[in-house]
Length: 153
Image 1: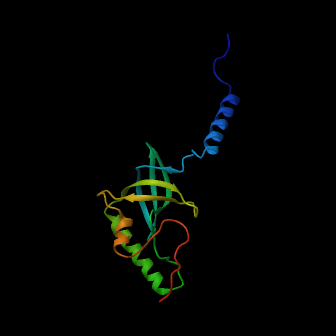
Image 2: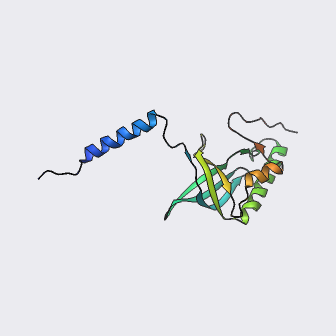
């Protein structure tokens, strides 16, 4: 009687062909809609947090998340005024997240730098900390591309 199960080589070839098809046609998953539940580990700066994401039941992935749509001043700036603004943005983000240690990540994509992901972050009460930071004037809007160079005052 003939074996009706495909060989390992056949399965590998099929997987390679399917992958090549999706990559060639630009259909590879570049974004994940979410929501993905995540537990806050710590705030890194005014636009980046470290989380333990739970994309599947009983699976956790620690990753840095850059908040989509904003750019915070840099903590390592040479300019004291920029560093001060960066500390304020970091402090406010920390306060916002204190009340919501579990958040939802949506509109998730890879980031070209530092091994982070970029995602919209929603707190348990439904609020958006990136929007709050923008409204407070602590961060700049960011849609990709070249960032504005901070001037020291």
